[in-house]
Every structure is written in C-alpha cells, then in structure tokens.
Length: 360
Image (cartoon, rainbow, N blue to C red; front, side):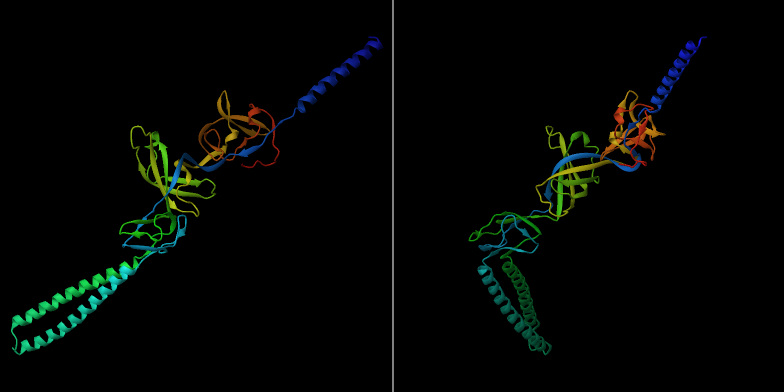
C-alpha cells in the first residue's frame, strides 16, 4: 500500500469514528420531559348530590290582637330586628283598665262579705252547741259561706283575666327575629284576632331542597347536608329531618327539609346550595384528577420511577375537590405525573423541578 492510500484510509477511519461518537453523544443528551408530580394520598372521599334550595324560618308567627282596642302607637316597622318580649305596639288601655278596676272592687266586696259570713258562722256554731239554734239554721249558714267562697274564687279568676287584658294592650314579640310584615297602623281600631305583625325567627332555620324522582330511594332522613349561601363564606352542616314525595304525576321531583342553627346573618328567602353526602369512603387512595388521562388501555396514571414513567391502568371512584379516588392500580405514597401527563407514553424520561414531590 502506498503512503498516500494509507493516509487516506487513516483519515476515513478517523472521520467514521468521530461520527459514531457524535451519534452516541446525541443519544445521551436527549432532553427529558419536564413535569410536575404529586404523591397519591389517603383522604376521605364523599359522593355528593347537589341541589339548589330556599331558606325558610322554623317560626314565623302572625301576631294578632288579644283585646279589642284602638292602636295608640306602633313602635316597629317591617324589616326591624326585634328580640323576644320587645314591645311592638301599644293599644289603648282605657277600657281594659276600667274593667280591671270594676273587678277589683267586686273582689274586695266579696272578701268583706265572706269575712263577715265566716264570723257569723263561727257565732252560730257556738249557739248550736248550746242548742239555741236548730241544726237546719246552722247548715243554711254554712251553705251561704260556701257560696260566698265560690263567688270569691270566681272573682279572683276574673281579676287575673282583667290584669292580663291590661297587659295585652302592649303587643309583644313572642320570638327574636325580624318583622316581616307590619299590618297595623296607629289610630286603627282592632278586634280580638285581627293580625298586627308577622315576625320571622332567625335563630332556627330550615332549608328546602328539591331532588329528581330517581333519587327518592337514596335520599333519606338523617343524611348529612352541607349548606352554603351565595355571598356568604359560612358552610353549615345539617341533617334531613323530612322527605316529602312528589305532589302529582306531573311533578317529577321531591323535597327534602334540613334544619340547622343560623350561622349569623342568613335570612329566610335566601337561595342556598345543598350537598347531600350520598356515600363516604374513608382513607381512599386519591390523586389530583388532572393526573388521569385516557389511553387505548383505558384510564391511566403515569408513575415516576428512576427518571422514567410507568403507565398504570387505574379504576376510578368518586371525585371531590379536584381529587379522584383510585379503586385499583395505585397505592398510597406513589409519585404520579400531574402537569404534562398528556404528552407522555410508557417509558418516557421525565425531569421533576423539585427534589421531593409534594402532594397538591
């Protein structure tokens, strides 16, 4: 072989070796897919059924006049907050006061007569012991004493009624709450039973929720309901106390009623959202819902192992608050891809920004 041919052969071999090394370097430097991850964790998962309802008061009495009288003063208006026992209106107490004085006078008269008759009866009993009067005369005096005592008892009962009637000229609120309706005005004459006010209690509330007919066998008394109100951060928990079936064949729904204590400023008539806890799975394996993707094999999650992902076919359960329950395919504490999962396939190399995955 001539020196020129040998030189050319050496150059070709050098170039070939350099190309192979470049290919190998290129394979090593293949970039991995950046992803974010989360740990599968145990959490309580609830199967919820949502419904929109309306808030009602457990007590909204219509306050009526208990005596016939003229309205002297109205002290509250519709929308006023009142407390139990607060005066809402004042009625003219003239007639009730006059009746009270008349009954008082009659009771005093009967007390005087009864006292005199008691002294007379005592005297007659002494005379009877000495046989100065007959037994019939004594018995007649005793009967008169019993009749006077009965009249006195009736008079005292009438006195109590008259005193109460005077008190009824001050119209009081039976509950703490809000004046829903002011029906009466100053100067109006009212009779017994005429409506004056309607007061809505704000302490104990009731929510009414409607549900489709197909859930009638599943939503039952005693089930828990999480209740929230638009524009209010409070979330309260109550229990279903009553379930009413549909009213007619054309009404394909039923109502469920939930009672609870007012968390603060909730008012009857407000719109509510209710979440009924249909089922509860404690310590269920769960992952962020966005970590699950659909592949030809089914619903899958990608588990990070040694810088690469392994495709796991999973069986899903309940969804709640952005998490989904894994019935089969994952265990607690495994690292699953969350962001970037849609671009992965089994065996893809990945890089995680953080050294330690954190549950989200």
